[in-house]
Length: 140
Image (cartoon, rainbow, N blue to C red; front, top):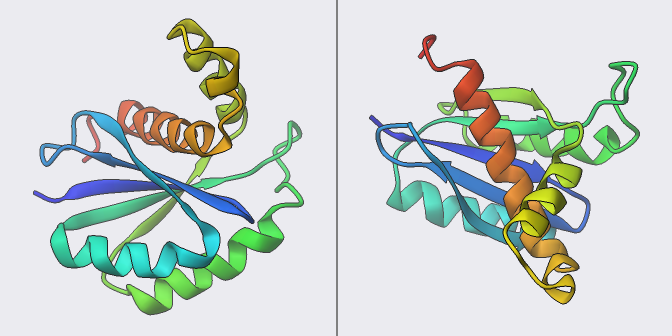
């Protein structure tokens, strides 16, 4: 059984989270700059077996896609061309940044650490993945 990878794609940074090999627990993997995401993914897919990728899809409160999908859609298109054997699923990422900030606050991180956008993006990817796991626990 391979891992499940979650991607919180942003114009500047990409948060990444991954499951354990049994696909039970989501953990923060890394945050990379958007311009280096392809080399990171190439290296990661060479080292690890990934069964599927979950990508956070930004939506507004009315369930319409957010303006930021203009950056995400080209990424999704390129991903499917580069890695056609890896299934991709979209997951609602509304409020994940707020949840990440709250998790950092609850975890006792200092204010200066909570301003670290790389950490926020990585935690957001973890929240996206954990939520997906909980919603699909009996479907896999």
